[in-house]
Length: 112
Image 1 (cartoon, rainbow, N blue to C red):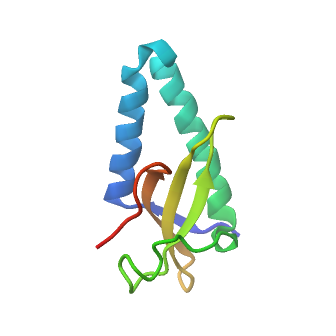
Image 2 (tube, helix red, strand yellow):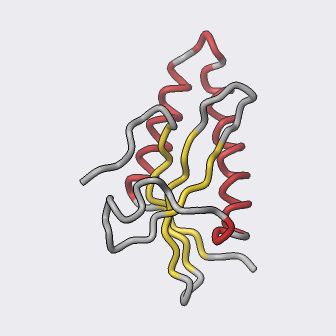
């Protein structure tokens, strides 16, 4: 059963920033690389949307926005690591998944 996926404004901004970064790096593939990354992200989101409850809590759970149960899915599109963390929350009653951020693993954890 598929959940209803919603992208929070921060998640959209994160995706757009990453796409822009890849597009500006012509030596590594530019727009083609950006398109491949986005395609892999869409595939990951589709898988997440099928079974979001399978993924565990993010390290920030209970410390950042304590009223939320913050979950994460690792997204590693390339063979070389690191990847990204897809940070999200669930509304199980409505079968609603909200993607809050797409955060590179080398970035610091979220804090208040």
